[in-house]
Each structure stands twice: as structure tokens, then as C-alpha cells.
Image (tube, one colour):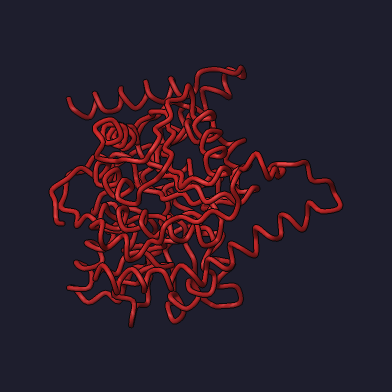
Length: 418
């Protein structure tokens, strides 16, 4: 049913129609509206047969999910940013145990300095945690990915993060075709757990594994991730047959058939970049967009095929690895190893900074002439950074650099307004 609805509530209602049996979560912006709405539905009986577990922290939330999933329940949670970091020990335990937990991550910057706005540094920090990671480009895809995530997680017995940009998607009110319960019932079978905790037939879960078997256990997780590379497109096809929408999969290609320049991105920034590409196509530029859905497992072969034939690839990402650069870009370089395709990295939107069409157009103009550095930070105020470096050189003590930079930026804005 097509509804004008906030993204968070669209996710909550979609998850409810997948009939989780246990939901355990701790509120943190910008995912709070999701679990609030699920809680309301459990309380009113709209979501029946579900136990909503109130906990004292995100670590406790994931711990409760581990217990519920190990006991044989379809399990769901949600978090963001520092909340994800707080539950990290349990996040690794969930994947190590092979538990099919589905978790929404409303992407938000990681402090310090403290920042509540959107980027993708939280989930990128957990790229090696053993969880599958799927990124939504809009609220429709975010809702659809949750339905697919339950099926994929339960088939492979692996946990999945469905990643949606905080505030940009979670708090946006737009039309979403919510998956209907009868459609979900045809697509998503009832959960049949691989193990049940039964006092009359006890088993060990979470036992210590020594050096003689640890490598094999880790390798098993790797093999299951590779299996997901095959199942994700198959599940997308099954979903499309029932729901009539082409959501999910490994990646989306847009106007790339004859593109000499291809922009690769993931998440909600896809919409802005597509608009810029449409305008540039109108003036004759041969440019297209590839947006990743699956980041874990990373679809190396699919990325290679989608980018093959381009002269240059511009990787736009909302996170980076200090001292190296783009995280996604490093994977793209691996996928294109041995090719002559030039790869440039653009870090944009950190901490919620606006990614504007004029700024993108300016960068694309230069990139199409190969007149950009390998790594660029969009709209970086180099004068502000230089001033702080000079201040530190003059007074070589540890100090409050973030506060100094904020003060300099504020002064610069005030001077510009006069």
C-alpha cells in the first residue's frame, strides 16, 4: 500500500509485518523512531506474538538478541553510531555464532568530536565484523531490503545490517509502497531455526575455540559471505516477482552504457548524484552512476563488470580511513586490478555536511579532465586546517583542536555575513 510516511515508521511497519518474535533495542538518534513505533505496535497488539525487551544499553540489546536468536526466535534490533560501537563485542559474537539477527543501522557519524548528523563511518567501522551489510538509496529500498534481509539471514544463518542514512532517510516523509502482509507471507517463510535451546536436549553455544579450529570457524564465515553473493541477486529476483519492484541486489547501474566517467557511491547520496548526472547527460557528457547495495560481501565481480569500459571511476563515499583514504575506493581498486581505469576518491558529507549539486559539478568538471588529486575532500576549508596546524606548531601542547576549529569556522562565517 502506497503511504506518505516517515522513513523510520515505514521500517517499523515493514519489520512488524515480517513478524519478529523478539525485539530488543535501546534508543539512540536517529533510529529511535523505529523502535518506538515497534514498541507501540507491540503494546497495542498490532504486532502480536512478539516480546519487546527493554534493556539498559546497546550492548545489552545485542546480548538479548543473541540469546533470543540462539533460543530459536526471529530477532530484530536497531541502532546507530556510538550505539553500534557500544555493542561491538556482542556484534562479533552474533556473527561468530552464525545467528540470523536483522539490525537496522541508521547511519550517523562517530565521535569524537560529538556529532549526531549523518555519514557512514559507523557501519564502515564494522565492515570486518562478519555481518552482511546492505545499503539503501531511498526509503522504498530500505523497506524492501528488510523483507529480503530476514530471508537471506535465515537461509545463510548470518546476521545482517540494513544501513539507511540517518535523518536523510529515517526522518524524511515520502511515499513508500509498504510491503503487504500477504506478499511477505508468500516471500518470507516462517522461521525454522537451525537449533533450539531445549533443557531436555542440552547443547553448547559460544564455547571457546582454540588455535586448532579457530581458522576453520573464521573460514566458514567467509564461505557463507561468498554464498550470499549468489543468493542476494536470486532473492532480489524472487522479491521482484512477488512485489513488482526491482529493489536490492548487489548494485544498481544508471546511465552507464556508454559512460566514460562512472560515479560509484552508496546510500542516499545516489539520488543527488543521479540528478547531477541527468543534467550533465543533457549537455552531452558521457557519465553514469553505479550505486552499491551490498558492501559485505563485497561484489568484486559485479563491480568489475559494471565499471568495465569506463575511462575513470569517481568513488564518492561518506567515510574514510585516516592515513589512507577511501574505504570503498580501496575495494574498487581491487576489483579493477590490472585495468587502465583511473580511480579517484571523493570524501563527502562527513558529519552531515551538505553535498550540493554545484560542488559535485565543480568536482566532476575537473575529474573529467583528470585534473583532480587521487584523494579529495569535498568543500574542505584548507585555510581553517592550516590555521590550526600553525597554532599547534607555535604551542606544542595537546589541546582542544575541535573547539579551536569550530571557533575559527564560526568567525569566518560571521565575517562573510558582514
